Image (cartoon, rainbow, N blue to C red; front, side, top):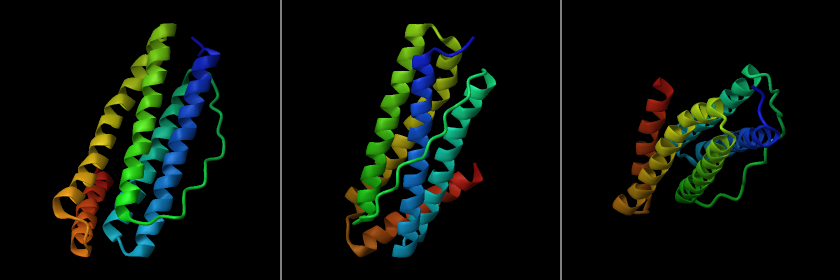
Length: 169
C-alpha cells in the first residue's frame, strides 16, 4: 500500500518539524553551555538527539513502505535568547505545535483508512504527551523556586537530572 500524496506531504512536513526541533535544541544547548547552564545544556543536547531520532523514525517508516522521504534543510535556530525560562517556554510552544501536527496526520490517516500510518503514529502521540509534560514541569519549577540566580541554578540542576535520565534510555 502506497501513501497518498496528501499523507506523503504530511509526513514529509513532520520530518521537517522534527529536524527543526533538533536544530533548535542544539542551538539552545550551545547557548546554555556558553552561558554556564551545564545541566540545561546536557538536557538540550539529549533533546536534540531525541528529535533527530524522531525524524529518522519517520524517514525509515516511509522508506520501508516504498515511499522515499524528502529531506530538506532545517530552519536556523534563534540566536537572541534572553533567559533559560524563555527557552523552556518556547520549547513547550514548539512541542505543542508538533503535537497538533501529529494529530492532523492521525486524522488524515483515519480519513484515508490508512491503518498502517495510524498505528505507526500512535508512538508519537505517547511521546508528545511526555515531551509536553517535561517542559511544563520545568516551567512549574520557576513558579515554585522563583527566578533569582539561586532559583535558576536549582532549575539547571533539575534539568541535568532529566538529561541524565534521557542519556540512559
